Length: 96
Image 1: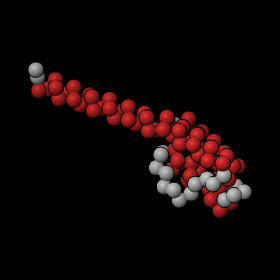
Image 2: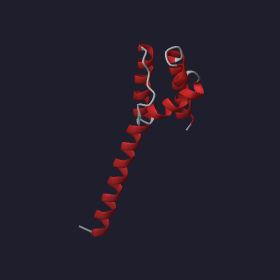
Image 3: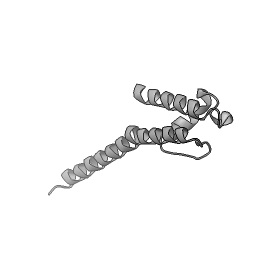
Image 4: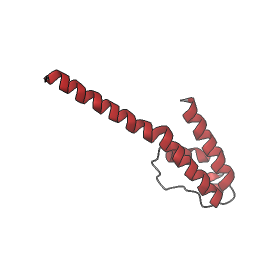
């Protein structure tokens, strides 16, 4: 989705500007920061690359919270709805 791609790019750009001086090997460019942004937004959080500056940690927290709102919560809601639909289907099929 366009919103998700936009959030990934904004997160990668923000963390690059916040962490470039402290960790140029990990966050030296937006391209290098894209991995961190995707992993953080999808709430996987491998821990292979992480911010060390205060502003970088602030952006990381915002990114993680945004990821929960964009991916984790909707996925849980969808899974619950599918489970309810399956249970209703089984109840209707088996009869009262």
